[in-house]
Length: 254
Image (cartoon, rainbow, N blue to C red; front, side, top):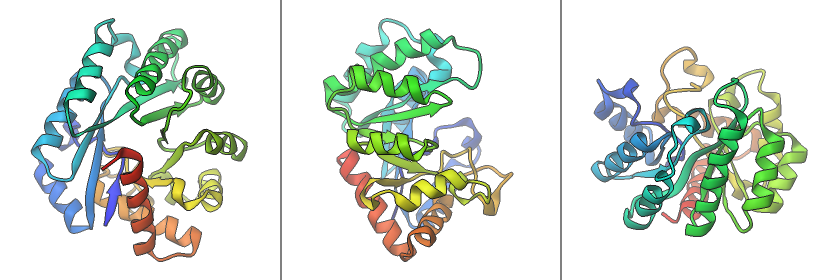
């Protein structure tokens, strides 16, 4: 069985054929999926989808690109969802994204700090988006994330950063870019990580694996990530699926 630990199957890209997408995932051996939110509305949508679909779980939170939409009341609503909804298993997708000039970095940082504090308070994993913001992401985790656990989604950090995150107890999510010919850093990290810290993801509908690059991504394609990981680690695809599924179950208490 495969576990796609990061797929935005609530996205409008699937409005016309969401049921078919889920069927193809099951036919490809994907038995578990985690749908992370990007804001309050998608948090609710991910929860509803998790309730409607066997094997689907939800994460709630505010993505850095939408940090400017956050309100003072949001943390309490997120807290209620984590405490009251059995299929909410994490805070995410949250973090920092410095690729674009907006939202301002200080706005992103304030929201991320709130999300880290909430994950620590509620003792749930956190799903971190870190794009061109490695230093500040680590600084916030060091200051506010004592005892936190979680995953760096679509991991792109250096071996040095990886070593520190391993000491902090984090896991590492790999997606379609692991299959790209020029993705040397991600492949090098995946080759050297302890196997019990690796998760596989699609980030659907984004980051489509090389075999379907240029097309809409979907959870069924997480198999390509499993195949690439298996090749890098000289294990079978079945073993890669078993290990990463166990890792996801353990991290998210599923």
